[in-house]
Structures are given as C-alpha cells and as structure tokens.
Length: 181
Image 1 (cartoon, one colour):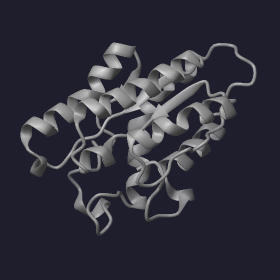
Image 2 (cartoon, helix red, strand yellow; image 1 turned 45 degrees about the horizontal axis):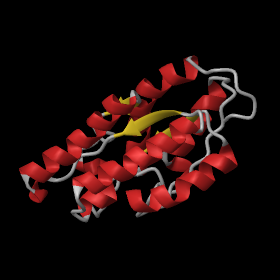
Image 3 (cartoon, one colour; image 1 turned 90 degrees about the horizontal axis):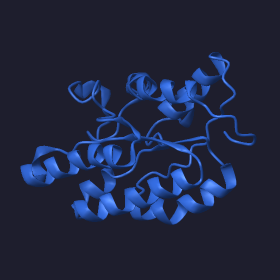
Image 4 (cartoon, one colour; image 1 turned 45 degrees about the vertical axis):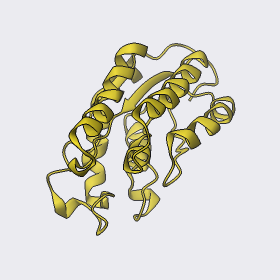
C-alpha cells in the first residue's frame, strides 16, 4: 500500500505526505522504505539498516497485509512487527502502526485475530495506531485497481487523511534531536 503499487510513486499517499509536510513547513522529510509485496519477515531483515541510515524521529510501520494474504500465522506476524517496533523505539523513534484487514474468505477466526494484532501491538508498545488504513476506501470499489487489492491514485488522498489524523500529534510532540528526520 505504501509502495504505490500500480500507480506513479508521486501519486502515492507517502509522496503526498511529503508534500503536505513541506506545505505545513515542518522540518520533517519522508523516506519511503517500502517494497511492493514485502512481508513482515522482509521488513524485519531490512529495518536495522534503515534505522541506522536514516535515523528517523518517526517510523510509520505499514506491514502485514501480504503476510495475511498468504495465510501466515498471526503469531509470526505479531512477532515480526513487535521486533520492528522494539528496534525503532530503541533507536529513539516514535512509531505509528497502520493496521489492515483481510477479506472474509480467510475465515472469521483468522481475520479477527489478524485485525486485532495491530491494536494489541499498539497497546503493548504504546504506539500511535491507524486501525485500518483503508477505512475510507474499502466500501468504494471504484477506488481499487482491477486486482481489487491495491488502491487507485484517487484513493491515496483519503489514505493520507487517515494517516494524518494519527501522525499529526506525533509531529507536535517532536523532541529536540539533531539529525533526525
């Protein structure tokens, strides 16, 4: 979702966030470390290097959907996300988790456990949370590409607004820390 699959990177919600931060005259920059199709295992293998390289003040963690679509164990997804949250927090970054939901054909037990995982992690690690990134998009089929999974360019501003609601308070609470982004 954050890698702007199937649309121009410049139209994705992450690029729109960067533009908004410039308009708001914040001293934040956005580094999009997303890889299309990434799983939590892949993210976990990459996060240490990304944290060292970019030294972020805030990490927006949007991973897990591809794990869920593959039916990977929710416990494994949570373990990987927890490890990434812990690493980000140890590096001094605040974390915003972007939750996701799965289609009902995965069964109610799995989909409920998957959806609950994001809130459970946010509570456990005291992070900010967007419970469902696609909240304003999911009921509008015309806002999805033909694969019915990835949002269109027209959906991206709605996704940004969903993120902005929880991100804005983190921007206001910025600690003085030179070199952070």
